[in-house]
Length: 399
Image 1 (tube, rainbow, N blue to C red):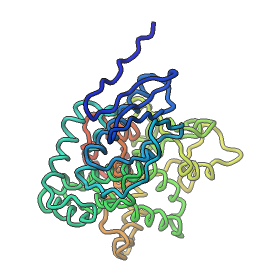
Image 2 (cartoon, one colour):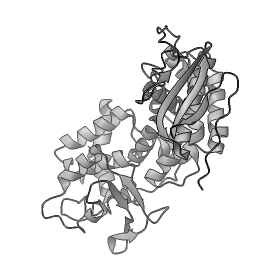
Image 3 (cartoon, rainbow, N blue to C red):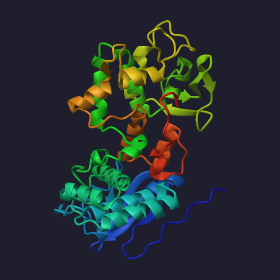
Image 4 (cartoon, rainbow, N blue to C red):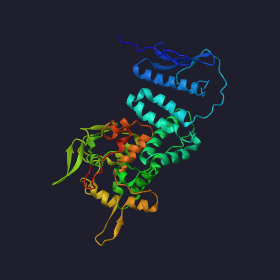
């Protein structure tokens, strides 16, 4: 017989989780009145976690005197029943960063590992506690304080987590705007950390547009977009064939890489850290791939081809289209990224691997867990936000 999980026991000021007609329900008291909030969810392990997160949010709001007596903030699409009459909404103070962090981590607690919750979240809570101000209106002051007091990498990681917290709060209706959006990317790392620096979202879009508009290198535009949108290693992207794209356009399977040999470029089974992995295709990514598939395309045809229809030499891409080169007369011919840096459109020159780290950085800033980002890009899990760190590679290799 299936064993039911125990009811969440009540304590003073707490929210109980009960079942009514096999559906989860939150029961709690506020200001002497009893409330019943039906979640419209069946009673199973996953939905219990959702209910626990909702219960902790309500308890936190009651504790910080931000409780919404209309229950609109907590009400799902299901019907709310309450034994109390409607209460006229009253203005509530705006939450500060410390309060948002408490609510964010309460929501995340049932969804992340105990070690992540105990170490990473506690560390960033301590950084927030030491801020000169925790008002969202002091976002710039907060950023400057973190940059002044922490190492560039630690400041960037802290801002990444604060940004993820505020994105969650924005989606949860707790705040009207996220003032930390994009701040982490603006914290530039030292030159010796070149392998983990990344472009901002605006810089990424400028680079893509420059490749699309280039008379010489526009045929690389689809590859550049793909690398920015997937975080794939160049060697994995260049080895993709159409058989690796599912017929329903739901996912891509990475299972081989392009490598150099004495005989030239060749395909090799397996990836750097795993045998294979799947990557979901969203509308943005499908928009990149679909125009490349012609009516006579065969399953073993390469997705990304050079001008002659064969493998793209990524070293050539790097040294010509990306960075630039000296011609036979000794004149410097700048590549697209070098030109954008000179124009001030891109703040600094980064190697092509910056496209991978840009995907990782933006994914973390938008609230994805480090373990999920690691799974998407094929990194070793368990390193937390240190998944940025990978060994530097020679421009002669493709990994």
